[in-house]
Length: 374
Image 1: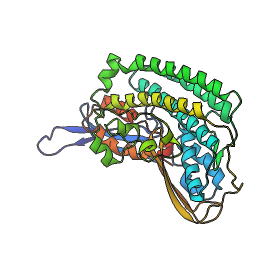
Image 2: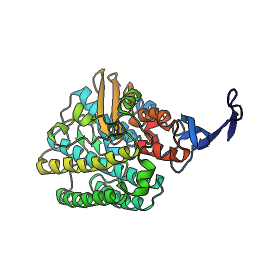
Image 3: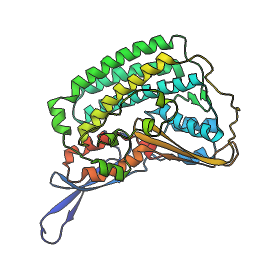
Image 4: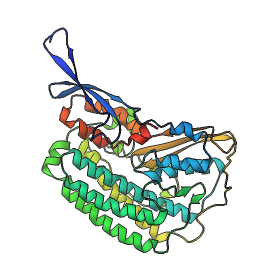
């Protein structure tokens, strides 16, 4: 802790500098936030990243294309399948690969389930940030159902390596649709229970309403995307505005907030879980039979060129810029990570906020440091 004296008109006033992190139970990763406070009000702050850096983008330059998928699993380690999809779409675009219809539907179903699992984790830990323990238990009950379902399909609970360049690793188990229907029934009940438990809780509303306001114009200026942007009233969803895969075949809404405060950022994610269930229900009704993998060489060797692909991950606009030099390893892989961009707005959102609200404001962005420090 440091004390800085202010000179001039208020010579007796002091600002206290305090450190939040880098190891802090509410930072959702390894992240240091330096805060200057005047009393209980935050005067300014400085976010410091880089404590989790692993050089994933550089490692991609020495890995075969199929090996890189495992690196994308570990960027946003809560939205693994969505990350796998982004890289595979970029590779397929540069090679002009058309993947089988069945694989497209499998990808959408699993990615939307992953969105629900990610938002459930957010719901639980955000309840903890606000001082409530019970939401965590509800959230992990539902998340565990999704993780067990993933394990039956991909063989893993987190690092799946299931979406491959050209389709998916293998076909679905024979009881997939029946188990998926039961899972969706449980999830719909679970989402409603989670909503009833926390969303209108008097103490939760007092902690989140009107806190950390980010206007739509400011959100756009800062490059904010995903639920954090939509909570500020901007109806931007890459699945709709720059559609990819087969998302243009489904009917679903884009939940948006009104004030851009912590509560709006929380509730947009609750509503997004319901929209993901709608997408999955539509997909499972029309999923075709057939192959799940296109005719692709075992050693991927794209033609010389570059490509840029955008997707909508649980945290926002996840984009991949891929440069190929014609060999079996990329010349360059650049990831546009939503958590990194969303953090740009943190200084603005924390200005003049109470110190006690710093954790709630940071938590409402739902950052994953694995894709920030990549």
